[in-house]
Image (cartoon, rainbow, N blue to C red; front, side, top):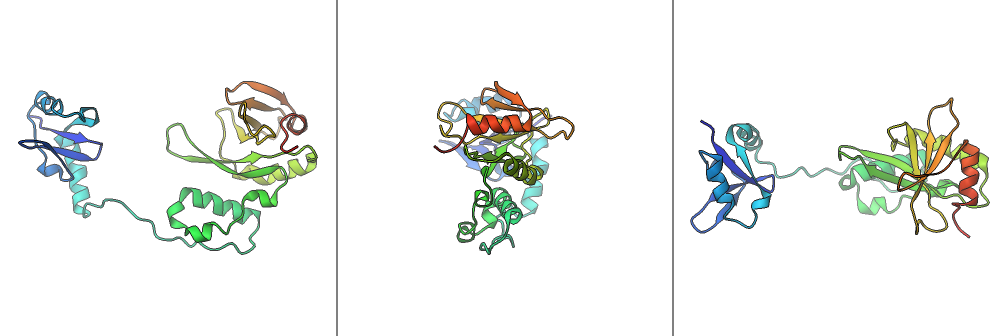
Length: 236
């Protein structure tokens, strides 16, 4: 015969008291129900019913007992990493590595160390800073760079900097295009725009899109650069 328990807020368990429902860490001390109907009746007695779930005890008990054996660890607090150090004149590659590490392991880096490190824009003419995005399923973080192309920028400089940064870009769409946001003179006031670079070495067709995924421009790398430089430029 199945036995059921009530889970609340995805991590606590309910014990049915005389005048209230008690929220417990200890699954073994939670109220056990012989039927789902009985558990539903208890859930209906609280205004927090929408946060409650009925679980089969046999499905959740093994995980709880393992957690109990480990000492009922509430959370793991990271130790300070060797990456936590003050900036000492390192180059672009080291700055990118530090920025990416800090984003993924913020609590392993001392704040007073973090504040000494420059943005990647200190080393670049056409790119402003590193950006991070979370995947749709929240399982991974993707990195890219924000474009900041002034009207006086030169194509060869842009091309050289893009070549340096491409290996670090993991924000890739389903068609294999590297995605970079454009920081323009309008400061994206009316719409956000993105440069999509095809990483296929054979092709030379790239896109500029807005945040609605509408294509604003397509062309070669040089043509896209000129479109950004003349239409979506940064500054005066």
